Length: 457
Image (cartoon, rainbow, N blue to C red; front, side):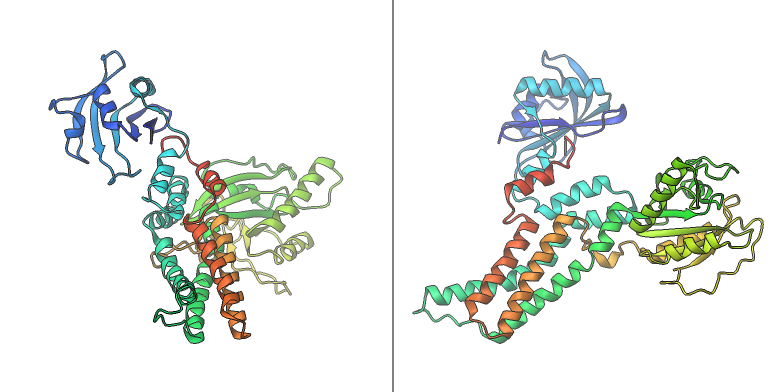
């Protein structure tokens, strides 16, 4: 493939900047833009070892002094001859070095082209390639750990036994059909049933991680609801660590939803501070109340906030009743600094709250209890998960289709159908798994995945 080059670090000035290139003739290009102090040609430099020298522009003038390293094929990120230049992170310096590479014969890399080449050259499968962008986009340590494990092939290793068991029964069936005179043992019903059950169990376990994986990657959509002046905006500010929302004593100050992303322990919360829920004639505030109710319906978690220094009102109870219809909810009493003793009402909730927390937005007392309750509801990926949480809708759909095909094959086997009917479903499962890993993925799927990448990766 032709030689591509790009800046791999950010656009802002940094201490260190990196320019990378990969492809045919990469080392010859390096000789034209880099003068090592040891005087040896670039392709004679020791692999994967930094060498000091001068970076040159297209006229041979010194741009900067720094380090270069070469990665010979196939033991490189892309599987091609590749190199990196590490210099000062001035955007001007990086741009001049990149222009020198372009003049020498390289071209600008497209978004994700380095990783795409790694995939096409067999250095990564699609799950590992997707883990690269997940690692870049990770918002929590747990998300980063899961992505790093997937980049190391965790999903691929989990799926390989499933693929092998399905390939075993399909290939032996065709071998018997195509070579009837050979002494090839046919696949019996018991062996087929065991292979299908093993695949079903593994795919089912994997599919069961999808919800946790989505939350790990995207965060918990959390609606903070309550009556006006219950302390909702103060709670958002306390969790965010700064004054994100306006707080006043005037009821109805928050008239629209205010969103903020915060890290609560190992859990990423996408907080939505909503307008106070009450009956109102104000058209603007009424619209805000409607949005509050909609946010509650779509949230993964609802924090139903009430003023803990006063008696609960009918409005508070109505909001809690609505919250009890949510996926998960926590009752939060604010203003603990004014009154610490609160009693949660004994009522017939559709689902009881996961926790009842009394806290002070002013002093911070009780916020740790709220963090503990949220962490218990949405546990982060553990070391035992080993990067096997599905974090992508594409992956989830592929696993679901594979499992549905396996289930159909099991039903056909139990119903006494002929082997060819069973194998049709088994092959469909293999196709779905191949799409997941990239073995049989269509070009438009690959294009869509790599469109998420930044230039230089």
